[in-house]
Length: 342
Image (cartoon, rainbow, N blue to C red; front, side, top):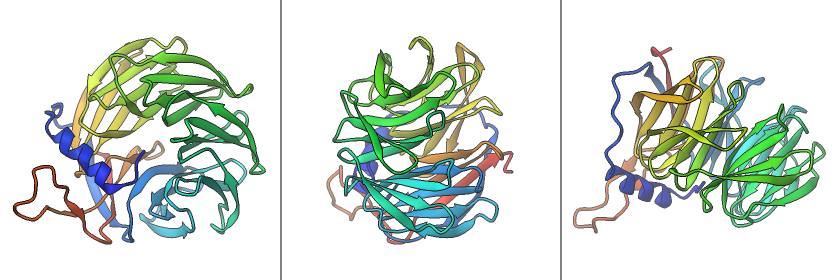
């Protein structure tokens, strides 16, 4: 993903030319906005389920958000160009610091940095793999995955053959799945061998960003930049269904408790689709959010979704047609939605 606000808004402008999918009023309703403030853009939001917190990348830091109080609870500093942060099972947080080609290893209680770890070029998406208890950074310019063990040591670097985006794991299968954005495919990694074991095309999808998984039915949900959410069989790589979504998709999540899959788009919509059956996906809502709110997180315990957003000033009168609006300094906020507004 790209933290730069200019790139984000360019996607929004292009996506605005595409008619967003329509759906009747659905289950999700707006609850509240919470001010985050601070300078800089953002990228991934990730859940710390045990700590009831969100880890929100924001410029050169990670903002820690208390889900029980809907309030800021602290921050992790010195994470230049941070794309994301994840919690590991041993009480450490790891962040992907894109501008310094490093990951930070952080004490989850004190939020103090323990060490920094060299990765491949521009570590972007970051995830925890519970079977081997390892952290994966997917490196944009490195076109690779760096695998980090519990001690903070890189134990493998896996070539991926293109620019990776989001990844998910299936511990029972011993696999990690990751989008190759430039290769229009899902790359399948064996977590024990640290090797690529398959590459599956995502056609009719193109240039995928978001990725989620239903572990029960073995289904991947893929958010693609040609305005599609695809459902893929994670055992065979077969595309079994697809539905339309908005423009500029970045994040995709799945809620096992409700069967809803979500794709958040920079054009200001979240498509909510329901997995009716292992081969049937139905759009139940096109939720209006905010322009540029293209990353999100899901709390499956409450079924709430959280989207980062900001306020913008329009280009001055007489500006070129493709001129970009400007982010209002300090205006970053978190938009919270829940089922029936709860």
